[in-house]
Length: 145
Image (cartoon, rainbow, N blue to C red; front, side):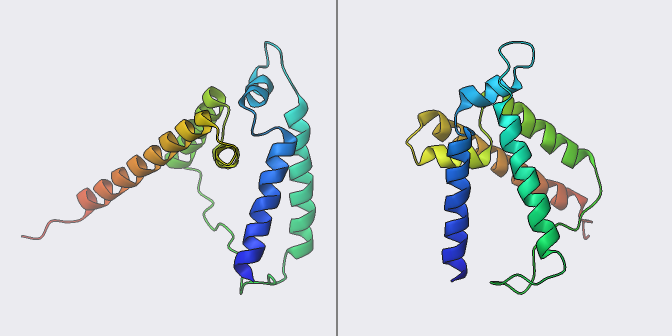
């Protein structure tokens, strides 16, 4: 049942991205073009998402989830260079390509080659970050003599 509900939630999210125009890079880039032909419509999509999340969080806060033992909430509160660098990289990628991960994966289902190129680059970036993390851990480990 958990897998079915996860699938249905993902399907609803994908449909919402499509209806809201988030899968159209031209719409996203138009939203980010403040000094050109600015399209504010995505602000309403994002605002609606924030309102729904705000209300839903207030309803479920303090309760256990129906299909799991606990909610998986982030515990890290530190704003560090990795968080800021990741956010900046995400923003630059979103602005240049017009995709972020969710809409790109949704657009893959429609056969978009641009979304496929973005997704390949996204996964390559994830692999590079993981490789860098492993090297950093290996270098930080004390050497036994």
